[in-house]
Length: 415
Image 1 (cartoon, rainbow, N blue to C red):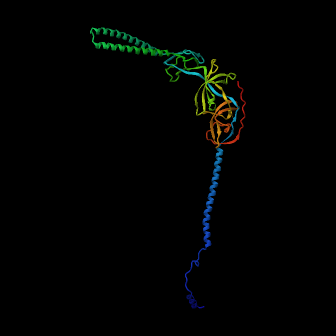
Image 2 (cartoon, helix red, strand yellow):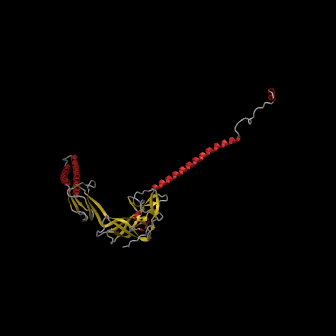
Image 3 (cartoon, rainbow, N blue to C red):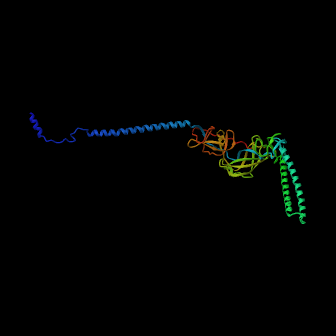
């Protein structure tokens, strides 16, 4: 075909615009593949991030649990056991003198002599010491002289007033002079009364030079000696001269657990035993109670009076008071080593449901040596730590490592 034929053939073909399908470009399958990659990659990154966060959280939780477990105090616990059924309540107590008074001086001076010493029995009004007060003695002499002078002036004023009363009848003197003498007489009477009061006061001060016993008892302390400078009153160093105790009757204050408060009545007879006198029993009687339950200790304060005519009972001695109960009760038994004796009183450490410490105040009953009775503060459902260290505090975490069996006590024979 010649060049001309080619030109003619091209001129004969109609000219049509190219369509979109005829243009070069990506196919539909390529578009879907690219969109799938755009969605898959972020999803994969999110899944990887979640997996990393979950693994890290589990690792931190395990580390925290390990740290907390290592910081918790390992302990062994036990359940309090019910004691033997008993119709007797035994509580510890400290004996006190029925009356006790510090003896002070009522006048200032120097101790000239003391007549009693510690352990000596004295009677009411007996002289304990003699104080030398020269200032008071001289003041009394001056006051008596002033009283004598006032009485002499009163006598003269009385005579003068009577004379002026006679003269006024004859109009020999003016009424003004009579009134002045009457006023002078009244003034002299007041001066005599004042001087007499001063004398009486100083006589009392002089009487205080003799230190006397306010009641019958025994001298438990002597804090003075001959030549000591004494200041009147109860203030200052060394102001107390003696301490006197009335021990013919002893007082015992006992804290009764709330559970037994309704069974302790005034007039009830009790028995008292002392550690230093194990084979002797002293009879006492419930004198009174304070009619109020202590909120902190949940106890009733009861006073027991014990006659002590022979003086065998001493103030400050430790004893046990035995109360006969109207209905039998059962105390709880715990090992003696589980009791914490701190400033707040006897306590036990209880493990709570959250494995933390809770310190509870208790009331102690009888002591059997290895075990002790608890009359108030815990129950048989509590988990009590067997051998608690002294540094336990409320809220402290613990781990229970074992359980301890509580052996039943052998009750002591009643005397």
